[in-house]
Length: 102
Image 1 (cartoon, helix red, strand yellow):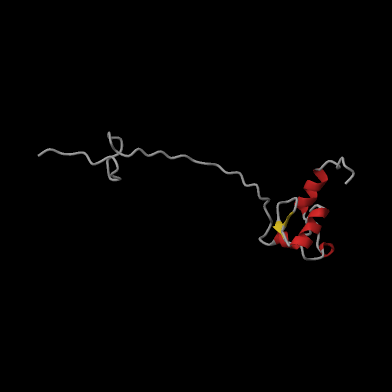
Image 2 (image 1 turned 135 degrees about the vertical axis):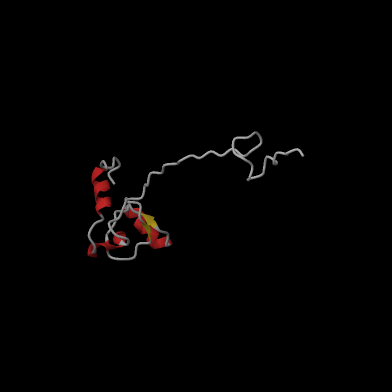
């Protein structure tokens, strides 16, 4: 009786033998770009920095805006009632003054 090799697509084929499946594993590292928040929902407790014209556009179109910290939302509350987002403030203070006088 002769022994036959399993077909190449057989997942039960022994590893390392000719015609057996070859397995490779790679590890991908990902850097998070979203700023960490102390607790879930903390970004809701802050006023965020957004360009003035984007706030006006959002008021007219209903489209969401993106703050300097990356938060995306549709503005609808008085920002004077909340403390400034520390991430937005840090980014804003690191920006150079605009050259167009805006």
